[in-house]
Length: 427
Image (cartoon, rainbow, N blue to C red; front, side, top):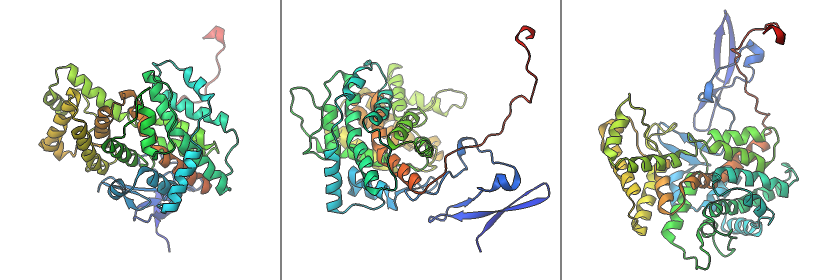
């Protein structure tokens, strides 16, 4: 017999099934709550509400655990590359050598972006925020791929996934080159997925592209660490948009828009803006750490602690090593990065921050790396979107294949009661 939870109200008792996940997570299945009781739950922000059952990502914020399809993030970041992780997230298993080679070959074959897309990007001023440009370009892909995906056809589903995996890095690179006033660069079929992205972003006119393995490896790790993170704001947006049977590209565009916010994907940009503000104020980072301790001070320390992780962000441990490696290899002397190192040192040693587990998170270190690589601050969230792409695809695919119903949250109305209309001349 399955476990049940009992709700008692007005002398009546109602029983609801208890669902247990593979990691022993428990949930009360309230699908029939309204039909049984006439009531709904009220949960602003959905912090206590499970919107779906998913086999993609497991996250335990209290223990600092993050796994993709059962694999620890630490092991994937060390042993796999981004394309392997993308395949794992989307299709459920790590690819064989032959499957990975075919996956990469298929992506390479579809990497051409229609020339007319250049007219769209030309319409944006250089001052346009890159996230707005990327969202628009992703949505515009629909015009060049107008047919909807037949989800019952594995071939059609695979082709749609390949198309967006192939074209998205081009759009990311074009978005940055537009901002920098550089000619739009096409990829190099002889390069790996992440190396090709880096080349498209950074190749200078009339100069040979020189690969830096430390830089490529760090970028690869960053993309892996951002590839999925369970039912966050942008992922939930992708799923709820797709639940209306909206296509993959437009669902991804919606996710990009959700990611743009400073409380979500914009957090690493907010970190650099905070560091720049400290630098403009003389660079005394210790003063700002004291301000962060003062509950009456409006200053917010960006890039420390995490909404989900109540311990150390496991992604931060991994990317800290990459940040140290990139800064050491490139030998960059940057006052902004020196301030970042100072903040990190205080946070890891000061009792106030240690006791409250306000450790540097992945946004803190990713911002440092992106700045060191020469990526403009406004592009940080675009890079986050590049990493999150396979997770969004996987979540959209899972939602459609499971036949989930259209998302339609309820509300508790707190407005005026019924009242008569007053004619204009009597108001």
